[in-house]
Length: 343
Image (cartoon, one colour):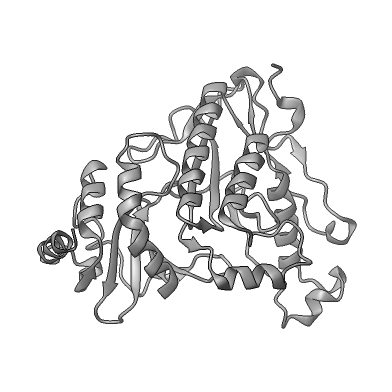
């Protein structure tokens, strides 16, 4: 298998040059098959971007990302994530090739840039480009966050330990911090409406995917959810497959979802971090099986069933915001419990 991978890598290196650069390829036999299955050409990231266009992804880890139109994302890998992907790729390829619906973000290339020595992978952009009515990065815990609301990005402003003022009461928070916190409150309680069959298909895939990830000792992944609201047919895209339905007012709701950032292995370092965060409630740093169980339980409750004719306007309800941050415009949840379809 290793010999075949090396042979495939050497063959592919002659025509795979991300942003025109020479690269070393990893598990090319796996990713070549995945590209072929998805009708993605081998030279899909050879142009349309360059290494100067990288930007922070917005997460705590500060990973750098670059975009190729609205179709693909190139993401820088830490040494730990590079090692994780090296080990996961063969099983990941077999899992995706089974033909079952999966929410795992499709990965098509894993490489090292010879000029910088840095590691990267290229994946499908599963939500396309905005503006979005709302976009969330969700884990089913205290790390949930709102990324975009009504086409406006929400800047991440974290309470770092060195930002002493952040820990001395909310009266010392900046307006950006207040808005970010209000968005986190919305993300924790957001309910995502889908039709009955759509909801069941999503939850079935979610259970399969999290079982797969837990079986490979992986945790701390996210559920990326982006919602568009528009006239019928205007959100169509050949390379994206959102859950769609028409609302009674004639508007089309498109819900884009994917499981992302699934390369975090449960290590000794994570165990230590869990002990350090012992006072933190509902934290992300828990063992893989527990993480998967909580993930499925949370989204089984938060992904709700709606009828097309009863589907509410996305601006129908405000989320409750603590008094300390009420100077910020309160953000809205997508759905509330009154919109559940009765069984």
